[in-house]
Image (cartoon, rainbow, N blue to C red; front, side, top):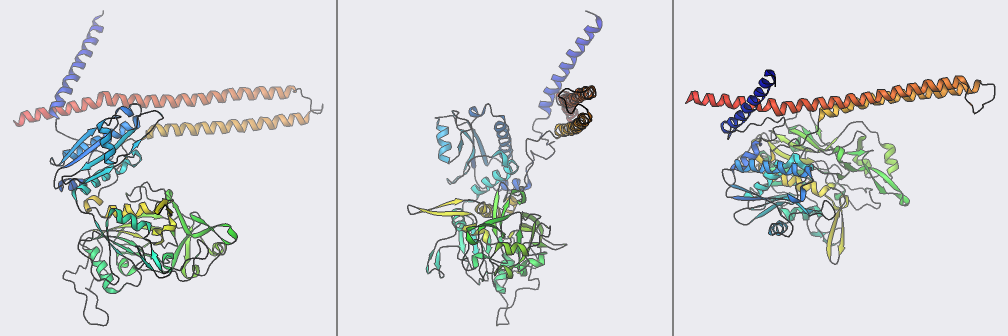
Length: 622
């Protein structure tokens, strides 16, 4: 063995020993130090989450049920489970001991599996004959309340932090949130004067009553109870100044509100003779008195038609016809980044207005639902008399503009009653107010929807009577939209502020770019091959037509030469295609090698050097 080989081996051994010593020292010196170097700050909790954790009154127990054995060959779920586990540990780390987290593997036929089922967690059979997979969270508080996330959907990873914080917040608040409902529509059970019978509550109302305490506010109210968590205003028609002032001041004080305003509400009209058609008498509501000072309005008398999202109705003669004002909004026009609309596949609206935002508006407007670019404006007064969808289509002119149909409003805004409470009707006195606010006391949290028919049964649910029971089958996400909006608004401002996050698993964008470039080269080469093939066929046809023997099946010498030339070109082009593929593979391999080198060598050396420097600084300071 030469002296050079001996020195090389000794150097390698010394480098290995130095690396091991550096790793050990960094483990001791960096213990307890956390540094989030991810691009999207995946391991840094939002300020709202810290606030929710600080306000936990008593100990909360969380149980993360995940089937470790049942997912040994499902890396996607295991990767996401690691993400959930790490975030739960981060939550517990910052809870000052008030959050206990336990990780449970519910093996088949075990007590843990029985407990997961008792909590109401959902198991999933991913393959025939395999064990059911649990991946959910159950939480309990000191008084026995339980809350669960039945199954953690990896597709909703961006809202994982919000879902966990919401679960903890709900267990911290022991009473049901109060929803104050202000509406002239018969949404709850009552007497219907049109049919002279008792009316059933709307399906959306039933959903709200199951999850919240729903409190109907009297018409003409001039005050909102202080214990109302969210004010839900549906079709605010002909409201007096006292009621408008009460709504305004509720929002100015930091109250959250869900507002449904409609320039043409079918729910406030006589039943149509033909499904999907309107009859004269559709009611209009207007809240611009309060919204305009924020720079937001819903133009009265203007309804959105959409040639892309128009739903089909049964017209004259039983013929299916697309009716422009009935909108079936798909995911393409629903905000996927807001917790209210995330995961919503479709929403149906009827005769919706739109939200107009002025330049310099004080409110921050985040669109939740929008039209397509094939939308246009229809006059509400004309809709009352148009019975034929074809006639309506002839009147319709798309503007190419995308209209906002529902939005989240935030920010600090002025009051519509900047000069003080309004005077009472027929009196010189004013509405009593001991603490009038001329502007919002901090940012507002309001969700504004330019439609009320979105809440009606006919646009999203089919209700059937089965053995005396009312069974509802949803065909659109309207009910989920309402519950999600109330669920979000009933949380604290800290909870509402929690942002959506980027996904933990991210695509290899550089590799995708390389593949895209290679596909472009392939496509250009294939196009060139096809063009040359067409030229050859044309040349062969011309040679065949010029032959004097009238089209013998035998090829002429010119045709044989042209064919030989084409075969040579085809071989060359195939060689070019293989070369493009080899270059792509080599580019990906080189990229992978560079990443391995960085991850295996440079990053550990960097952290080891940082650890050594920290140790030296500590020794000097001591």
